[in-house]
Length: 487
Ligand code: ADP
Ligand code: GLC
Image (cartoon, rainbow, N blue to C red; front, side):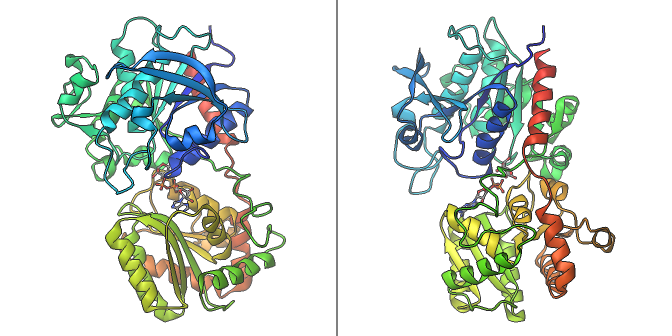
């Protein structure tokens, strides 16, 4: 029998506003909330990092199990995602999770040396809750795993006896695969027969993500274009063969965005709120941003915003080169980001060389990210690949046309300002199709040329602002998938 409302366990290593390093957290907060609003019986499963415990002080006991890997007891606590009624199950095991630092990395930068055990435990608990060993009243009908940190769960389920609800593995970024030495197979209580090519072995090592992709029932990724791209060698990161083999169960469901947290009409982070009919207030945000960042207050200077992890994926090196090329042409830049220390330093030097024209903020600042989305005239995101990407959707919603490489979710969410799209009034941004600094700089120049035509620019902004990126549609697609699997 198909349960009218299947019970879903949504296992993830980060969820906004409990803990966030990137888009996975935005999705893991907003998607379960959207599903919950549609009536789904869903619980998020997340590690009890210090940051999570701090924000969930009223959590109550849900279940207990022995830690399978080291002596000790794991407490599962239940709380609510802040500002929602979405239940969250917390894997409280202090020795693994309750520490100073990030979810994956130490404050000093390197990966936690016990990540295999930490995320082995997260995966194990996800499987345990889905299996016959869970004797609580809440038994999931679907296990939904996200990224490598939860990838072992479908493998455990496959080899344990008894109850095996269908599992989904969602790939948010194929580049992060959770690879550990062969000795971890035994340490994590995986059966030796799983350690082979037709299993979780990956070039002599264990890959959490491969385990998930191999043993799950359905694979999804976060945009239709990325679902195709990862089956090709260029963006397959060594997994394209397996993904091709499993293509019958692989699909792309585009992410949505939290349209309440990202709403220029009500955004508490903005000095001036606005909508499509009051775009003059957007100009006031630009002035305020220029003032706050020490940029020359100049309404006519095109201001390009960048909010990004500073990495190769995000094309930060290309952004740096484009700054260098365009700052002489009177363009201003406002960058917020953290990541690669060498590139961070290069950005800081660039800002020092061009005071009043380039502002660089190294760090993670929620409020400033909103003010850049609102105050910039255009948003630059030269990602080499992008499974979905959220910032280009935020920027469109803020009337700040994005300029991006034509890849992955960027291609699926931006309508390029071609003459046809401009004529039809559907254009919302600028795509470039060769991954190099010249093509990127050309796309920025193309944007600036249109920016110099106020009426055409206004039409572009309004078309961008009016696009519907809410979770409603995507959450409906996930529900359909859950129902079909539960059948
Ligand atoms: P990814 O997850 O690959 O980094 P996404 O575009 O999916 O890329 O999501 C990135 C999220 O992280 C967005 O919500 C973005 O605003 C946020 N973000 C990235 N860097 C920063 C930063 N330095 N300060 C504030 N928010 C940031
Ligand atoms: C990953 C991807 C990003 C995507 C996010 C949420 O971080 O890099 O493109 O938007 O996951 O799915």
